[in-house]
Length: 313
Image (tube, rainbow, N blue to C red; front, side):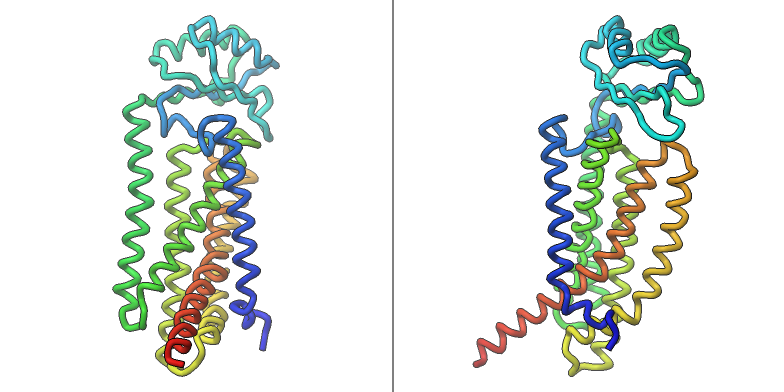
């Protein structure tokens, strides 16, 4: 019997590994909350404010930038030096919401401080009403997708006994992936200054779709094997189903990941947080489908069967 046939038997290790990842993410979110008042660095897409992303052709200091903003009535901007290839003398400044005229005046003043690179400088502003609406829509989208998935699996897998367990474990794996992505956002916000914006929400929903696709493929193969081998133990069926589908899942995800690695290495700086989040999420989605969703289902089934045998005896 090959190594992969022992996946279910080693499920405690996977659960422990996921617990460690989730705990690290939770710690990062707590640290971020203490430092910034939010579990992760929230971009202007989700709250009111104005974000300036500028790159100077000469070296400037944070105090120089802060003084220039103070001259325009902004006394406590959040200033972050951007780091990475091609980001010399690049800064990200967040402030309260300012009008387009004030934003342009600030850019003109910064340009007098040191020449700005026009192709690497931009301003994004979002009012409080728009920020609240985007935040509400993001929460509703995640909750709605989880509910739809639960009912979809219950309906599609109605031929299998206890279909509710399939749907519940799929949703748990989905939430597992979402929380790890949120933890990743908290870590990158603390270390790299990356912000959670509308693109981040797009990445989260994309990850949810990929993760559920893999989970449904595995559960569908389990359904077929249960029909073919009705007297085989559930852990053997699960192992067999994973072996029969793992190559398809890995090939599909690896093709997407190779493209994302290329974009990370050679793509633009502005899209890098989105691609990195997507990469981590897809990797986590592949992992959770094989090592979380199916083992959780098997554990649930075995415990229910054990209780039933105990009640009978």
